[in-house]
Structures are given as structure tokens and as C-alpha cells.
Image (cartoon, rainbow, N blue to C red; front, side):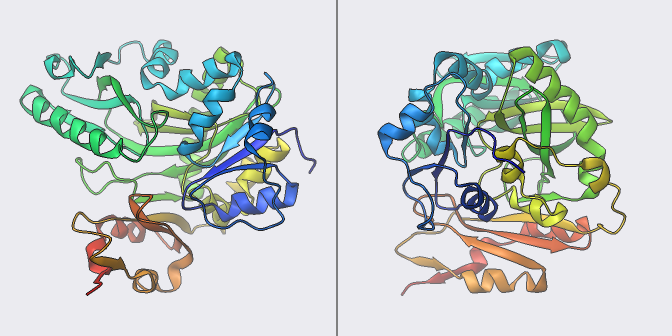
Length: 391
């Protein structure tokens, strides 16, 4: 493999993907650090503010980040042409317009914070989803069944966002605009990939995102396997190729979320300039043996035909996020990481701790299991049971 042109990798956040770090070290990728981050290997080439800013000001600049917190700096320094592309994805209402011709009958409407409460759920729409047009990490997202639940749901959304805004910058979460759209039932998935130098869509990973119930919007579990990718890769590729062609995308990474129902794919959102956060892409490396960041850095595609025909690869590889329970207080409790890790037994592949003062979780575990049923058990983990009193 040969390194393709890459201007900068932006790293922030309390959890950094080991796959990303290996790729950065191997290809000597320049990095711009935005604390708080764990210590990085001394061999990594760290850019100063001015160097990072100038490195992405060219219209052909190639950029990747690992965490939404880097987006504000990137948006301040991207040239206009690239800014338009990023905003077409980052703003959920603009993204809906982008894919409207593929889904002409799907209901959606944009509101300001001031007039969101006044929305009347249309008779022909059974369930809607409300979300901030500019958001992250499922904050302020609610599924609402009919008008009787509406005002209570909106108040709950505002409460979540007001609380989260205290520690998130406005490029990650904003409450000036909201999208209300028809809820499409189906299994939820996420997909990492990029458009290469020729505008071709490259998929580096697909993950199923199960929920504990219809009210659950958490990111507790994602998993991948030969079956997950094989069943969704073709329709996913078709939608992404439509988007890429429409905007003339080149050398641009993404994290795409969608629902899949009766063989039909319905886009939820596309997060620009990154793969999945919190070391989600690492489960692809465990499952299929290639580093997705290596592929982006070298502008190469995986050989999915060969990988999906591997009859011996029947395991399921999962990501489990240890969420902070409601009763947690930093001064009162600590999180028993050893006990959490031991709860997985020999299924545990890796555990990455986080800082609960910075993130709404204690850490993330990568695990391997024999079947999906074992993964789904993790949706009901009682994270409160791993709290230990500091007294």
C-alpha cells in the first residue's frame, strides 16, 4: 500500500481507537490534538494550531477526525466548497433535502425552538421522531407516538439539550433548529466508509445497532458479522453512491446511520469527516482482519466479495458502551472497571477506559461472541451494579 494525500487527522476525546493510532503511526499521519485526550505515543507528529489550520485551507484538503469535538476548529478553517459539503450532512434538515428524491413520500418538517411545541402530528403519520438539526450522540432525540405525547416529549428534549450544552460546543449540538420526521420502523444500522479520489464509494464497516426497547435511544451496543454486512452492503452502497455523485464527493470519510426494513433502506443521518466514534471501527478489524483507517489513509477498498464468502467466519464482534447511571456522582462513586471487564469472561477482546467527567460513559468494551443472542444480553446490563461507594 502507498499513502494517499492526507492533510491532517484531528484527535480529541477521552477514548482513542487503537486501530486509528496504529494507522497514524504506520503512515506517519500529522495530528492536531484537542484536549482532553489520553497520552499519545511520542512518535506521532503533532501539529500546532497554525499548522493545522493552514493544512486544511486548500480546497483539496483531506481531513479525518475521531470525535465530533474537533468539528468546530475544522469548520472555522475549511474552504467554502468543503464547508458546503460538510454542512449538507451535519445539518439533518439539509440532509433530508439531499435524499428527498429517493424518498419523496417520507414526511419531514423543520422548526425553531420557539415553535416546536405548536407542531400538530399529521393524521396519516403514526409516529414521528424529533431531533436537533445539529446534534450528536443521540442527545435530544425522541420517538413520539401521536399528539398526546408531543408536549411532554418536547420538554424532555429541551431538558436533555440544555444539560448537554453545558459541556458541548455549538458545532456539536445546537437548539436553534429541530427536525420532525416520520418514524420508519426497522432495524437500525451504522456504516463507516469514504468516497475515494475518483468519487467511488468505499464501505469499511457496517454495524447493527439494537435497542432494549422502542423508547431506547442509547448507543450501548453495536455489532458486526459476515451476516450483518452481507445483508445490507448493496442497498447501502446504492444510497451512498447517489449522495456522493450528487455532491461530487472525493476523499471524504463518513459515518452513515440508517434503518433497514423489508429490504428497503431509509437514511437517518450522515456524519461527515469521521468514522464511528469511541473506537467503534475497531470491531471491523477484529471481525475482518483489516484496519479501516489504513484503507482511508491509502485510498483503498476492502475485498468484500472474498471477506463475505469466508464460511469459517461465523463469530459476532460487538462494542459495548458502559453508560453512566443516573445516580452516579463523581465525589460519591467510582466505577469498578475490573468487575466490568470480568463480567465478559473470555469474550473480552479489549477495554478502553474513559473519563466520566468528559463523556457520558465510563469506557467501551470490544467483545466476541458465538451468536447475536449473546450480544443482545448486553442491552440490559445494569451499569449501576459496577458503582462503588467512595466513602
